[in-house]
Figure 1 (cartoon, rainbow, N blue to C red):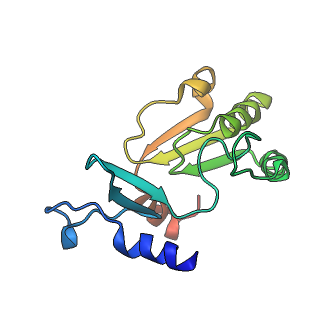
Figure 2 (cartoon, rainbow, N blue to C red; figure 1 turned 180 degrees about the vertical axis):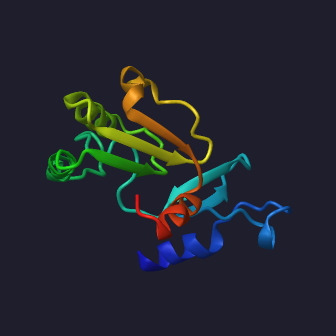
Length: 147
C-alpha cells in the first residue's frame, strides 16, 4: 500500500506548460489528468468528502468526532474558518445551529474569492464576516497584532 501511495504522489500529474516544472501543484492534493485529460484532484487524507459520516459510505468517521466538534464549538463565541468550502452539510448544520443559538456569536470566513455569505447562513449574515484573503496573508496580518 505504501508503494501505491508513493507512486501516486510521484507519478500522477497534470501537465501545464505555464506552471513551474510544467505541472500543476496543489496544497495537500495531487492534481492529475483523468482519461479525458481533465484536471482532477486526489486529497492527501484518509477522511475526505461530504459522506464521511454517512453509514452507506465505506469511509465512515465515528460520530463521536462530530459530537466533539459540536461540543467544543459551543465553548467559543468567535470562529475563524480558513479555507473551508462549506460543502459538508453535516458541518454546515452545526455551524448554523451554533450561530442561531446566540446573537453574540460570530464567524469569520477566510478564503480567496470570498465575497458572499453562504446561503445556509443568509439569515445570519449580520454575524458573518467575509475575508477575501489567502490563509498566509490573513495569518501574517495577525502574527504581530493579536486577533
